[in-house]
Image (cartoon, rainbow, N blue to C red; front, side, top):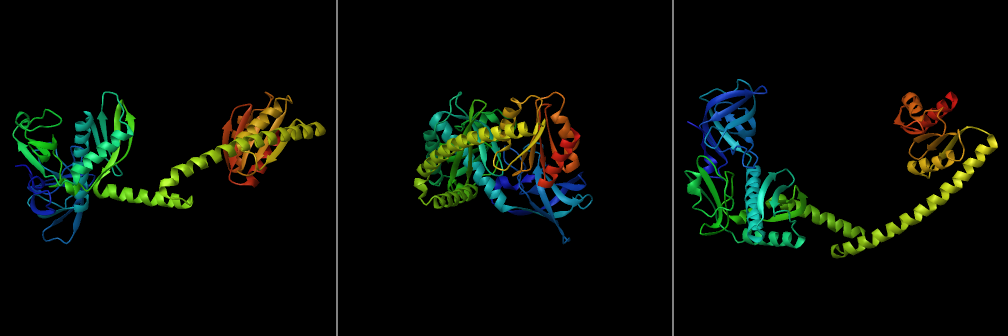
Length: 411
């Protein structure tokens, strides 16, 4: 006889006494089946319950990290952290679920039904994917390639929360087969063998939502608390809607509200004025970037002439240049502009601000990438590149300068 699933009769039951009917082993730990269980096994997009199990007469309490089954009418198996051999058939045990997790899953699963129902009612959108993650829930709403607008998302969110706060009854009705379940106005017809449970939000004669589901749900929509949509992104031609429900949504909105208030405070404005202030800041940053680009171009040209002058006075084919104001990319551009004017030049450019060393050569005689590969590891450096240019990064200025000295000596 399969496990009696207590959550089907009383979704608010937290614990039950039971008898172990079978034991197997997984990863050195006992996995047990019992004649009755409050644990919901993973399935239907909803994670399993977690909790504890204790044996009558033993002081030890063991964790249950997962519950699973083969089908809706089979045994429920509980994966424990008890060493293999702890349990045996016939043991009397007490099973206890983590109620906070159970209720969170109830809020989220029911809220997902209601939001999917709102999407169907308002726009004819069909839910073709559902995932309940740690930080958010996603549903994939198919609108034949059309993407939801921000206004439509706001409308769906308002519609579903109106239903949540209307304190609609949530009922679960069991049918002997799929055909019998069609007596109810189910939103999505999914053929299924064996018994079928249909979850209805509202009056079955005119429900807010009605769909087949094996998950756990609260007795009233009001227990969902709220439904908050976070964002919507395209996904395989559908709308992937990110959202959450109940306490999880409340905690996220509270954190976001605090973050918004802090950002507004930093800009000495109200949260409502923050977008306009950010637009002003973006314009200022854009102007500064343009000005910086002009200054950088001026500096690079001045430094180019300085390097060419120094090389000309020394009559050297190897030159070391140091800078603490130009970025590595700007140094690279400066270096190319120099070696393009002096054939056969080998140029070492040190960015002292971030301990980056660039090697550039306009001669096929010197292989920059090979030099970095050979010498950089000797001075706690790493990097690579092509024959005409390469870069190496070091943990200290001393190591970088020692690398440059070693490369110079090898030429």
